[in-house]
Length: 254
Image 1 (cartoon, helix red, strand yellow):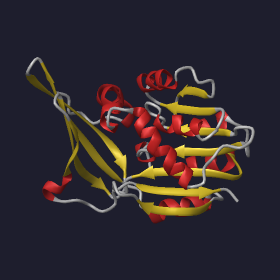
Image 2 (cartoon, one colour):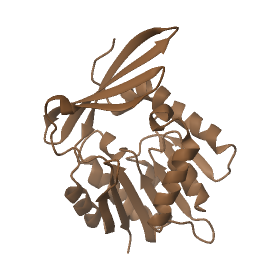
Image 3 (cartoon, one colour):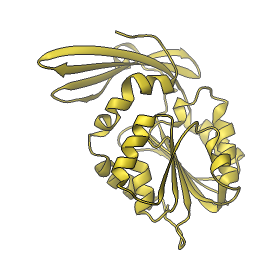
Image 4 (spheres, helix red, strand yellow):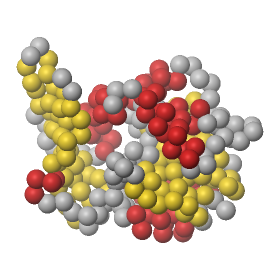
C-alpha cells in the first residue's frame, strides 16, 4: 500500500487516471451532455467561424466534447495525463476540431494562441485547485485574460475547501460499484492547502485490494478567485454553487 504524498500529477499517474472516467459515472458522453447544457446556459457558444476554445485539464474529454458540440473549432485540450488524453482521442472518434496537448496548464494559454484570439477557456472539475501553489492561480488567470478575445468566456468549476470539516465529516464517499469503492479523507495542512488521501478498493476474483495515494489541493475561496479574475481584466457574470457542491465561476472579457 502506497501512502506517500506527491503532486497532483503523480497522484493521477499512479492511481486516479485509470479510474477517472468511472469516477465521473462511467459514460463520458453523458457527462458531456451535462456540460453542454451548463455552458449553453452561461451563453458560451462558438462563433460563425468556430472560434478557438481551450480546455485546461481536459481529463478524458467531457468538457472538450461539449465545446465541440457548441461549435468551437479548434478545441485545444490539455492535460498532464497521457492516459486520459488517449481516452479523449478515443472518445472524440477522429473529430478534427480536437487538438490534444500533453503539458502544464500554467504555460499553455500563451503557447497555444496569440493574445486576444481565444473565444473560450474552461478549467473545470477541480483542475484549478490542483495547481502546485496558490500564487499560480493569478498568474494563470493573467495568461487567460490576455489570450481571450473581447467577449471571450472563462468558465471555472471547483470545490471551495476553505471551510474546514471536522471529525468523520472529513471522510467523503466518491463513488462505489460492484468492483470498486473510492473514499477520500481530508487533512487540513494550512490556510491554503488540504491534503487529500484517496482510498481505492478494487475487487478481482472475489478478493478486495486497497490502494492509497495522497496529494495537496489548494483551498480557493470564491471571493478571492472572483477578485483575481477582475484583476486579470475579466468581468464576473456568475459565481455560485451548484447542486453537487461545486462552485461555478463564469467571467467574460469586456
